[in-house]
Length: 235
Image 1 (cartoon, rainbow, N blue to C red):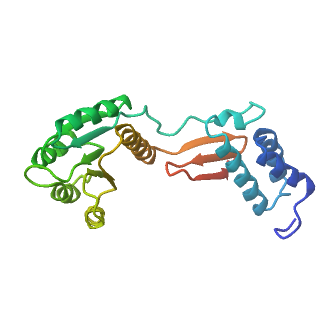
Image 2: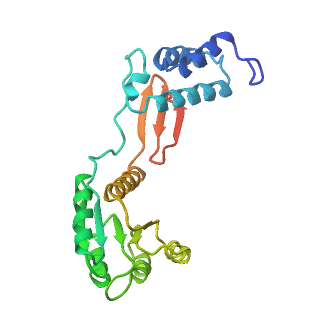
C-alpha cells in the first residue's frame, strides 16, 4: 500500500471512531493494522490527529475519551498543587487598597500593599510578587518610574496600571514601558479581582509541565500553551 493509495474502508472507519472519541477500541485495531504494514504514515498521522481532537474535547476528564476503559491516562508530568499567587497592590489611597485587597483575597490571592513608589520597589524585591497592580499618581517617584525600574530589574514582574489617567498618550507610554494592561479608574473591584485571577491562572499554566494521556498505542500531550500533539508509542 503506497502513501498515495485511497484510504481503505476499515481504516476510514478507524478515523471516524477516533473522531467520535472511541479511542481505545480503534487504537487496538489500528495497532494491528500498523503491525502488518497496511497503513501508510499519512494515515497514522491522521489517526493521531483525530485522537488529539477527541482528547481535547474531553479535556476536563481525559479518561472519558478512552471509551472502553481498558486504558487509563498516564499520570500528568510534573503537576504540582496550584500555588497561591501574590499580588503587590500599589496605591496611596488606603481605602481603595483595603477594598481591592478584600476582593482579591476572596479569589485566594495573597496581597501585599505599598502606599508609595519607593515602598513598592522595596516590597517587589523582598516579596517577589507574581503581579503588580500599580497606580501612576504616587507620592515620591510616580508609577511610570516604578514601572521602568521594575522592568529593568533582574526579575521582571508583570504590571497592570490601575489609574485615573485616561489620556491615550499615557496609555501608550505605559505599554512602551512594559505594562501588560492599563485599567482606568473608577474600576469594579470584583472585575479587577477576576482579571487578576485569570492572569495568575494563565501564568501558572504556562509555567507547568505538559499533560500526557495514553490510549492504546496513542500518546497525546497537552502543552502549557494549550497546544496538543499526538504520536504512536512503540512496543
